[in-house]
Length: 250
Ligand code: PGA
Image (cartoon, rainbow, N blue to C red; front, side, top):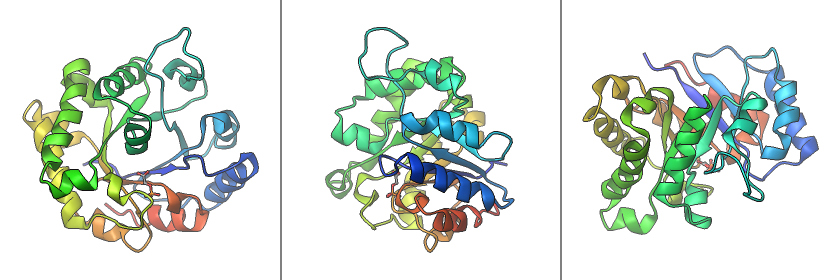
């Protein structure tokens, strides 16, 4: 059975003090659920947060990872550096990076490969714009994003990966995909993987992201191919994040 997974993606919405207050409040209330709970602070706060969560069940991840192993890449943070601070996960190709920072499917695939090489589990994001959805291109766009990574990394490397579907039109907009809309895409993603390797498809966790809140999470989690959620805005309050992850009984 696939374990539930809840990722809190703090984006650029905390400062040093609020990051520590938030992590302390989460730890203090960390209920026992069937899901694994992960927070992804901004890079700068990873060392301090990593220290705070030592000996707790909370897990740390990064919001991104460089597309290069090492060298003259000003401002970048490599997978090896993240590993030094115990990051178990790294989000790769988040919809916001794809949309606002011109990431290509190839640069996302490189990030994926470098994370895997360092033993960091990539959370490979797939996305679509509203225009793509409305013109019936959803499956083509998602398949292109996934196939670029499969071609470079090989399907076997998906044994140690997580996938996510985060429609850009649902992120930070308050518009969530309905359970049915999300399930349709999640089912498509799992089938695409199954066509290459049924075992991996059966085991891989596929997360939904986009305006997940305590009052819509149940609708999403009842779907057979939604194994967890990637939470932005609602992960910035310990109370709503707690409500979201304590709803995991899958
Ligand atoms: P949001 O972000 O919950 O604020 O919409 C979700 C995401 O980044 O996937």
